[in-house]
Image (tube, rainbow over the protein chains, first blue to last red):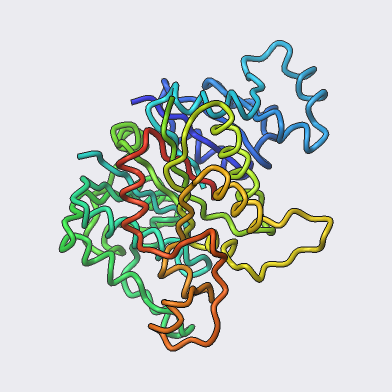
Length: 92
Length: 118
Length: 130
């Protein structure tokens, strides 16, 4: 089963990555959007655009991510993304 | 029936969330859902023997962990790596959980229909 | 189109989770999905007090949930054990437990954890906001 891990706390990123399997995806929301620069993000990773915009980080992160595989998605895509995975795991 | 994996990852008593998470596990058991309980990272400390939160006037919920089996929750696993990090051994814990490694933790999460933390 | 249920455990105002959950519900409905139930648990139940009264230039989360629930006919359920522990009660629970007063916003109902399990089993996805 493919899981979408949803992380809202950047301090728990390592523990979350540890629990993931290779086919899983990671969605960074709330404060965890600041973790987009983390070097260990080898999994499919998404960051929630509204949370980046709210924190004034949208442009910065987009420039930074030009050559990265992290995708910036909005709430509409967030809702649809949960359906592309078999389940979500909110890592608290 | 869909299965559920309940993950305990907090130190007991500083937060009460494990107590409320335990209630979700018991309710899922009442619905006959297959349940796995995982104790990982700091959550391994939930299983230490001889907890005495009574000295702080906090209710001791660790007795309920011992009774999980009575509720039909028999798959209980503890993160061996985390035990090591806290210099604990299996003997320091209530004898209810099986030691597993990180890969097995990921597999249990992967196999379950629902995964809940609190 | 899919059926979602949400588990909301985030404490209102001190954390973002309630705002995120509201946003998720609004967008899911706009996109044609349906919400079976939003189940409030742990500190998440605090949002159900009709006495929550933030300054007028801040969003009132209780009213935001209530508006959404009424417009879209969404089931907002508060866990009875978690709620009573934190001073959230309706008239019936106040009487049963000999408490004076009641503060549950009428858009919310108080029920047991079984409502969460049922929502999990009857929805396509359960999303937790903690």
